[in-house]
Length: 497
Image 1 (cartoon, one colour):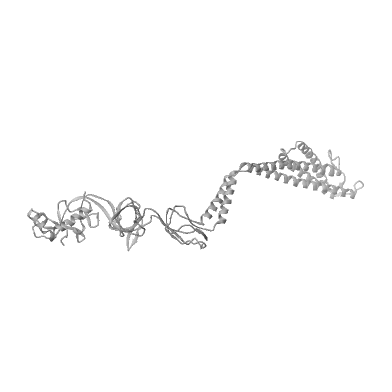
Image 2 (tube, one colour):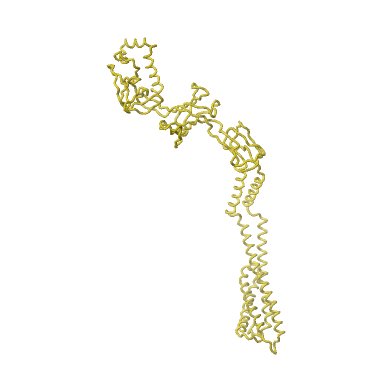
């Protein structure tokens, strides 16, 4: 395979054929019939024999050695530095704490949040369940007592305290005194009859009352209480309108009013106590159900969020190595107050270095990730080569000196202690192979009116300028000829103008 280096060698050899140092060799060639090179003996131009072959396409650029990763670090929150734990030049592993600010309160907050979450996930203790269950049983008993008390005071208020206002109160109640409002009189008398029925039904309920049935009895008891309270209110109004006569004096009416007032107060208090007992039972029942059910998903999520917030706040007090590498700057000093905008620590990755270079637009077409390359470093001269490979090509251009260029990153194939960040690198990137192509020195091509041509030396020694179609440049100083030349022809390395 004829590569670009062979082409350059051919070029050099042809020049040497026409050097005065090799006059003897030229004379021998002429004697042997080297008319092919010398033509009619009138030309002193260097020539080049056109041949085809495979040529490696190369792009030569320069770049700078950089660490694979390079980062400036700082604190995410303001604070006073409590410790700096690394020195310049020190190798650290990913996750190593390099410095921290004072954070005792945040450590405590995180511990509390984790404890709360653990307690929630552990569920309700047996002791707590027992307490909740006992509270529920007590609430049922208290409600049963409230229902019984409500019936007792209602029975007293109606059958003891209001019955003195009537004749035949339980069978055919009639007011025992006169009032001017006949409608009110009828309402009170009907009310006493209705209350009697309610008390009878209520007494049956009370006979079956237990803590377990208290919740079911509470509703009917509250309705009966309300009916008794309404009746007592109407009875009180009737007393206030009572007309003293020969059978009922003013003093008697006053005693009725006083006794009835006590009954009404007792009934109202019983109603309030019954409502409170119902509320207490409902609360105790819900509390027990909550204890038995354990933590809900929402409650767990809320506690987990508290832990995450506490962890985030604590993390902001640390500067942590994001990767394994070498500390290149450590400006954090204990006692110094820092802000999130300050960068105090720098790191670069340890191991294999990379090369950053910018390839001009005219040469970028064949460059892609995976291309092999040969690199030399100015620090060690051109005799020492370091193999590399293209790992990335930026899709967007970067203007360098007014010319679009594309940032290209190469990686050395192996770690080498001789390579250091910042060194100047000379890179030759292999971008492909031209198969069975005709490639000539670029200097052998001239142009007239924008049309490229070469000077062809005919077998008769005549020089003819022939237009050609050029293709790619496989390497510096070489140009592919797509048409216009044939294998075996001879051209001048310095075309005639």
